[in-house]
Length: 196
Image (tube, rainbow, N blue to C red; front, side):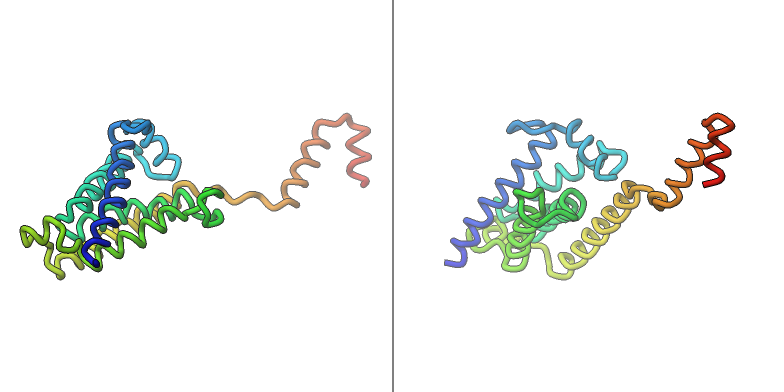
């Protein structure tokens, strides 16, 4: 039963993620294509947008295909997880968690499913089982640390790019407004304003 459950999970999650990547990369399934995806990732602070959009698209497309076939586990879940982390922390952060509020409900659900596939393995109905092709645990751990570290660094860097400038305190803005008003007023009004 475990193998059947993993197969269902892999087929659904992998196919949806691969489709999501194809939307970004090729514009298939009513997707934005690479140009539209580039604009989206630039708005999140990833510049230049086109290479970042290509990386995100390939992570979802190739990662999803590897998950569907259960090949080279945990590489597929890891690739897709990096993209989902960026979505959760950059596109949806600071909003209520529910998808109806623009929150990270979907990326977080995908991350949980990807972690389950990576940790449990693809099961016996997979190319890894058929060909004995899974990645050794040490290499998988090394790849995970590198990929997740680079992803977190990219998220932090993109946040620095899009962080708004500190607004001036309200009192300083009010003083500037009064100074502009006084400077543009006739001389008698300036005297009255300075007396106040």
